[in-house]
Length: 287
Ligand SMILES: NC(=O)C1=CN([C@@H]2O[C@H](COP(=O)(O)OP(=O)(O)OC[C@H]3O[C@@H](n4cnc5c(N)ncnc54)[C@H](OP(=O)(O)O)[C@@H]3O)[C@@H](O)[C@H]2O)C=CC1
Ligand SMILES: O=C(O)C1=N[C@H](C(=O)O)C[C@H](O)C1
Image (cartoon, rainbow, N blue to C red; front, side, top):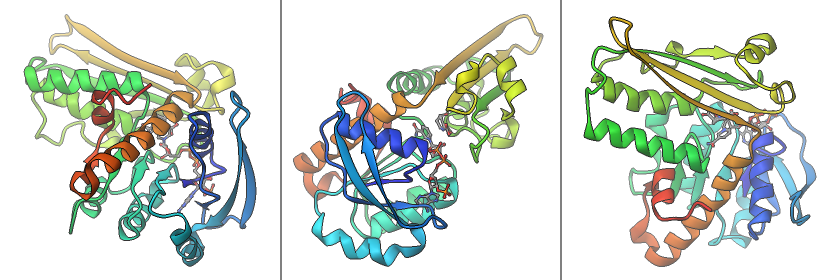
């Protein structure tokens, strides 16, 4: 059940599910102000298609009434809006729907609480589903664990550019900054853990100057640069990950669904917990 269509990321994830031979649930949740509508999703590679009835989030009783015909095999994918993260996660947990949460923002602590208490729920939650970016995040968490404080005294600057419609600060940047702060040895301080410390580029001129190709200004891009400079300015490190389009996340999302299905089949209720994309990567489940 791919929630958030006809939004671009949910649509890309639905196409990836078709590409990877999964069946789409014939109904899904759309934005609260949308009219109910039927859409056709077509994977451009395989040409597989599926028809999905979109039901606005203001009419959850209708969604709930349709669930019994599709459970227990139903898995939800969520690419909606930061304002919907917590209510949607609560809904999935309450209705026993395992889910992949790609939507960023919302109250992330409350999100984790809602899927761990009163009992653990099957889900994959990650601000970035792109295989190579997940691998980079794993490398950074390893550096942070192995060499905490290796960059002590360094200053961090972060600039990210996304399409103008993006509602929040990059969730990926917030996660990566967490690891870098560990390497600086400031993990527990408030400094630079807040999204407001990130420079956001959300206008065409700034994004173009930052290197975003013109065709991806609105069509979806995620450019990030993290610069670490020693206190005396004599040493500088730069970490950069620039993505055009959404396919890399969509493929990772479909792989995460397959991962959940496999773990549920193997472990049953005993395996229920919050998985990260690093768990999915370590299992070799990212194609
Ligand atoms: N984890 C990852 O790898 C990635 C995560 N993302 C994240 O995915 C999210 C979606 O991105 P994107 O598609 O670009 O965003 P958009 O805002 O363009 O699209 C979101 C869609 O969700 C709909 N929506 C809003 N509220 C609800 C709700 N309560 N239930 C169901 N649908 C709802 C919107 O409808 P309406 O317009 O009517 O409000 C819209 O169609 C963002 O948080 C983004 O950061 C993006 C890329 C990769
Ligand atoms: O909204 C986007 O586009 C993206 N959102 C995710 C985030 O906030 O980290 C991942 C990527 O940056 C694209």
